[in-house]
Image (tube, rainbow, N blue to C red; front, side, top):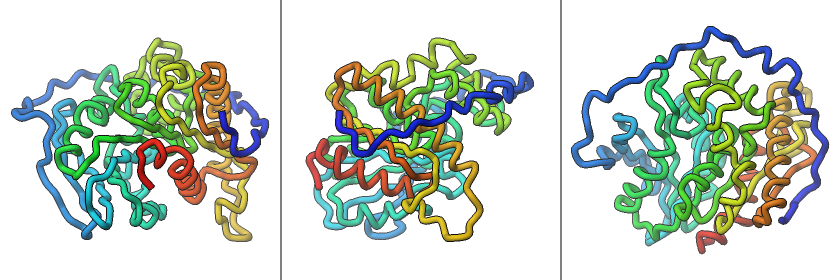
Length: 331
């Protein structure tokens, strides 16, 4: 395993988190789709925003709805591999994501790669939920991202059918899990300031509070904390299944540093510091797991960095050059 920076001891932060769970969460219901897909997953609309950026609407039979996806194409055209780049907590439904809050568009402008960024999936952890939720409906994002969207994009784009997946914050651990659940689909997988140790008690509590705070039932996802689903979708518990996939995982201590670009005199980012410290614990657990499993991985754990888009962007650049581009055979 290659460590690109030193690890820093981080407080477990577990005290009091579990107590924040409330029993009166939204009730899960099973919703029967109103109509079946006639032709399977397919493109139903395309809106060109620039010569290389479009929004492609794809019908998902698994969720019985249309999912919009930002799609970036190589400036020079031609066949290229595809990176599925997942957004954070609210899935860019609020306009907060890679497109608007980072330099990702400019970074990939000269890269020989298609980049597909699904819009949606707020607090879904991009997995297949056990039950539908009364507020957000049906979450079958694992099915969409592994069994529906790649085949559609292979037909829609000039694709080499070489794929990679990367996620940030909420979607970091799930990006690695997608590679585990769909072996052979992604040549590389990267977690950027995410939690690739979801069954850890601290992580289970934090994730449940995060989902429940939006009045959504966290137990509709993988069941109550401790249920088998939490372990089945925990990359650190399934590290051996990543053998053959190029793996990257990054996080920072939570202590703000130059990488965050915080203006002098600004208020200390307490929330971002706490979240990054928590995912740093997760990344450390995952680092130990891949090492024990003998799975090659590039792990970056920085002494400084808060949960900021500037940090995420820097991690994405590092992941691209160290892991993703070489695995895809591109530049």
